[in-house]
Length: 340
Image (cartoon, rainbow, N blue to C red; front, side, top):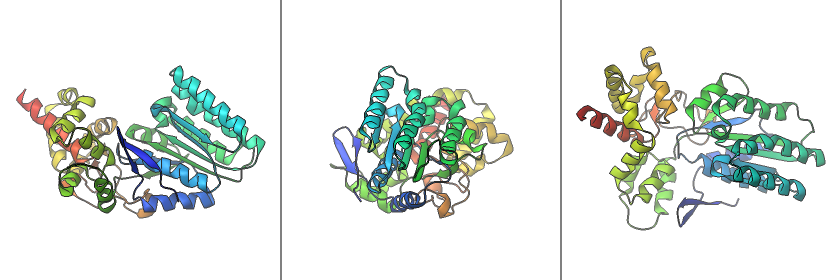
């Protein structure tokens, strides 16, 4: 199996590493198809996009006609055997990108898959990355229902079909989860051994692996952020505070909510109380925490589930901070608000 090369930072590409179980899951799906669209969610930067690109390569190697879209990154390709359909799809996508009509790419995907199947009965793979951000949250469930209809009631028959959709937006999971139109699967940050392999491939002087692990919790995106700021932890934390407007978020909270949030910095499971649900929802909306991770059954997860509990990394039994850096950004924002 070819391992794809992925951009890690400007001027630095790194070959896809680890995720052996996740790769095997894609191989299994390629053999039997996906009965429902597989909707994968997890922390920002945990490696969903890298895995999806590797999945596209696996499926291509196994004889699938592959449609891959990542509208928000303006990345679209069709690895299909019908040149006219491939060219038409790419031309359409280029026009949509030029007109900043990214949602059109997501919706047009249905038409191009049908056109392909009209020409030949084939094995088809649809891989959509962060598509809900492009089409809008209110259309997320409708989009997944359309994908399910393509599996259940195709206009033209197919040999096999694999549909994988990934999202970093916690709220989209709520919208989709209200219906039984998809199979929801969480994905966590990399395991320690695989993450160390990624760390070793980064050139130049760097902090010890133990220090990097304690800051990132195995999140490749957090690792890239630290690399980009030359391992300056304060800059990485301030970037999270600024990009997520945590100062304004803290100001919007009541005194009691700030107290709850400070407790959650030490143990995120303290959020699990009825009166704290509005705060949980705000933290999910800001992509600061991941909830509903109670079950660690391996078959329910893409790749490896997180440990049962690791408070040093901000992982509780039911709720976890997306990375230790996210937790530290919240801690710093709370401290600054208290002294303002």
